[in-house]
Length: 353
Picture 1 (cartoon, one colour):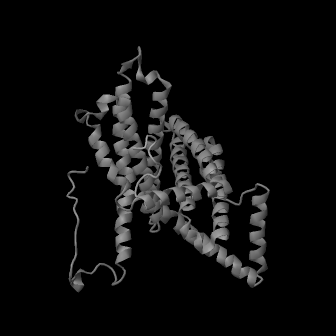
Picture 2: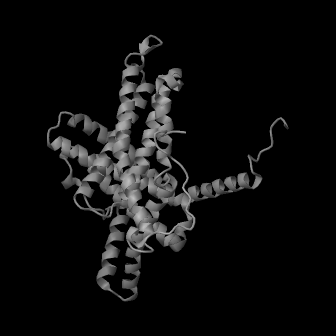
């Protein structure tokens, strides 16, 4: 379908003997070797695909600034402006995530599998979206092979699949994060049973602060530029609300949480948005502090994305604990089961065909 330069093929192993000197890592630990390889493939995608998006945005800007329809250039229409703005936002966030992740890796961080998964998901889905909108804005010509955009789209489709499909990676993000949160809750349970008064009081104070609207999440304002104080506060609130939601999920479902994939997908989406917010605040703060010429524009990009992500994540987190959404999830599950059971769409044809 795409990436024709890559010799993509199936490889089969049958009765293969591996010499001891060719063993990678420890025997029985091959899964970890494979995971490290996948991590290395994932983190590079954000950098590569941010470049792809730059190229697509450049072509789009050139087209809308010269193409005239209904007596005006395409760039003057609000519908077109909205598409271009979203393209610019997605590219900026993707590139910011790439630099944040690679910066942490350069500092010696070895626990970056969650961040790598987040970067892969956001980059691959953003690049696909940008390519789709680029073709849309080019109209009928965008569909033609001669335009060259169809090749970009064919090549991009695989990025949402290889190095771990985005659907599986979302579950990986959620379950890995919840596993850590679960350990914290188990420690609290042990302390309660052992009457550890210090831990009991600490957890009680955390819950009291949440009830009165005072989040126990760390403040990031001191680490961001003063012109981004509103966005820093939004990030702090999201982190606190995210932690509360994780706790509620674990207390409600406990070990059965691994079967709640509707909820896990939403939780991952919230985590991806929160990481994106942190990335753009970090990058824009640096640009503003160093008086980079584009600092003002980056502040605009950051403020816009943060507000969108703040609203989107609030809705996502609320939906996770909503009884109405639980019913909708059950309905979606029933619909899917019926389709699989029938092997096709279920409703009879309205004309009886």
